[in-house]
Image (cartoon, rainbow, N blue to C red; front, side, top):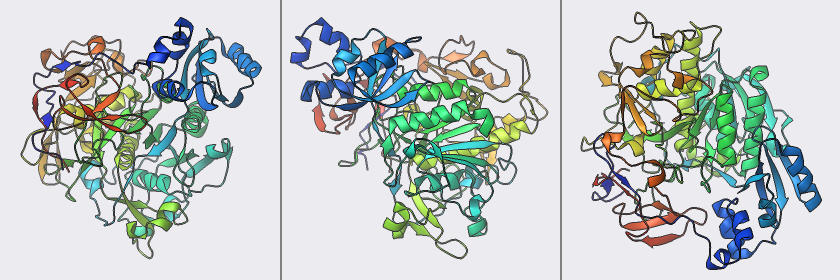
Length: 595
């Protein structure tokens, strides 16, 4: 539990973002004095690799992802061969190679090499709970029964899926990227992917409908990228994303769920995993990513900011944090989870997460042969005839719930738009516009770096999507007023909840009826947050400082205030004492405790 004196950030009032620190992952004194050639190579390495080279030298063999400049693919591949580097993966979609290589500084000095990144280990954003509490997610954030997802295909990039009656006839393809992307019979030796799939679209056949997912008729393309211990490499996830993107039409993929990630080691503009996500969105796929479970210091319980994981820091992804429903349908008692990662995104200071969704003690399908099921019997939940389900928490689960609502949303939209699809940017805007602002126990609204645009509101979002004419001309009104919700509110349970009606586009909060018009920003080809001039905007109160003036250093901000307290260094998770000389100040109002 965080102390009540922690700093609250309120984005809707005057909030000033001030960069107190101006140093950013400086290299060691030895690296700084070793010459301009070394420095030129060092700058192309991500921060993890820079520290590793400074600490251990440049002769160790490391598994890395090498991004190349446009048109230089063959040249760099030949250069890698002459060096004797071991080629593991070719990533045509982002112009990169995964290799085992040493002497990275020499490799980085090649003029056609754009950047070199660690092939980082992937982790799943789950937590274990030893007591099962059934949620009322479908009634709280969705439209039960109205839209089943029958028109929509979801790619789940995770640990796999274990077939059961709850997925019968709907696993349309399975590829195993832990074995090079081979087509295979579906399996899940860890269990996380099956749980995610169940939240998205279990039929509930094994529980008499009690644990049905949000879109029980959705089709699944399952791309296994994580092993039986829930681990894997970034490069395998990238390969799976690129495969889904390249085969989108053939496999009928509309959405990618990524309930996984790693700590960010570089800007989103060079991060290979982010670049794969952005390419998928440009191709028309909605990518839903978990924000991460780095919102709270596990030792002290103190809430921290800046813990968004990669690829949740991808501008165009729908990045999802986690809240608790308190086992009620009503929305007024929803509360944020302390573990849910807060923004802004590291290095780039993007406003993340985009929305939040239920992610606490959710019951969903178990892979009964998996590590999770066999190792944690207290997590099991009984269905109709057997212990066919499992209870997990985390932003992994929240992302899956959001994916289920997106599946319903696209299904509703396609019922009236058979030819032209709704763009990922439009989907994200609709979800933000209709989101419900959440408050803590004292009635104080959570800041926007905690809850994004607010809590997921499927009733409002699906209603808007069903009323949209996708074929409308750019700049024209595309919302059918006769079909659209008559007010900016939804009835959930016995309460009327008011929409936030705010879309966070880059550095601006776009408010009002923006969603009624087919904005240029809703095109597939526009990276979220860039290149659009808005008529009705608020720049975070009028005086938040963004862009180059916000310099993020080596730490995630934790502590009893943003100005003072502990910090977390990404990569080795060491705690060090922070002072006003190496912290970043966001605002000056109070943060209330969250569980």
